[in-house]
Length: 228
Length: 115
Image (cartoon, rainbow over all chains, first blue to last red; front, side, top):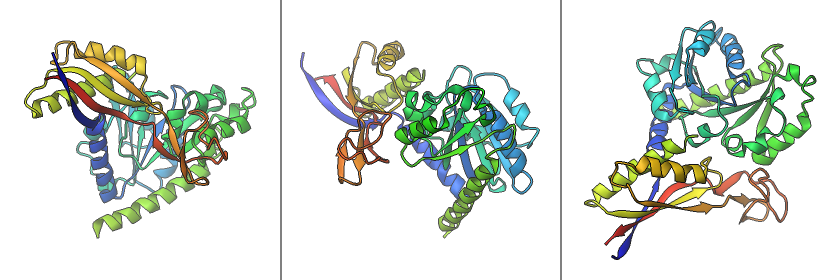
């Protein structure tokens, strides 16, 4: 039996990409600065986000979506900083996708939100393939994980915009080689912005807040352009 | 492991493609998979077979073409293959490369169908 070739050339994640694109347009129209956080489990995403929400909520309207396979523990923690927190429990799925984000936003009025954070499921592999419509993606690496994480997971580091090195208060105890970590990040994502933080001592939080303010200003500019 | 999600998205897409062309008897699916796509080839092959069960694609084969990582070197003004996927620089002049030309693909290229 003979066969023939049918050209297709279709991106497998086209549906997700289209939806993420539509979300990005919505965020631009509402002037919401959307930042996602990815890291391995236990690198301190929730503690970091708790501090950020606490600091930002004094002057801004903030909200967060937080993904986990199970439990609502993280949402409960973040709700101490702001009531606008929703947990996305993915069941067995190891990553968030644009559809889950869209569903979780239901009934929220985006124009009343300045900063929206999306905390992905703790995983350094799968989230790299899924665009969530965010403006900035932070990848977190804790000092206790070791400096070679970027080399082991180059795809996620490359798909992110800013690297946050967390738990710097434990760096000495863990014999963390900061120079090597920075060099490894530079190898997988040349020119990437790196910030060293400690959610415990507050180290580096000012720098992260400056970065977020600058991004919000850019989001506002895009909003004006989108409205013209 | 998100390869099962990827396989299911892929199968849905091929079935849609097939139906839009009046129903194809798909024997082989050719996929382009970038080394920087975040998707593991072996896990995807395994997931594909599982996900095909009880669909019109059951019994079809998945052939994966691996696409290398290619960056653009601003200094040489040429596309280059970096020394490794964790060292994104030009192999000739060592300039770091921020622009990825290819290597992120997860793309159904073509289908072999019974004529």
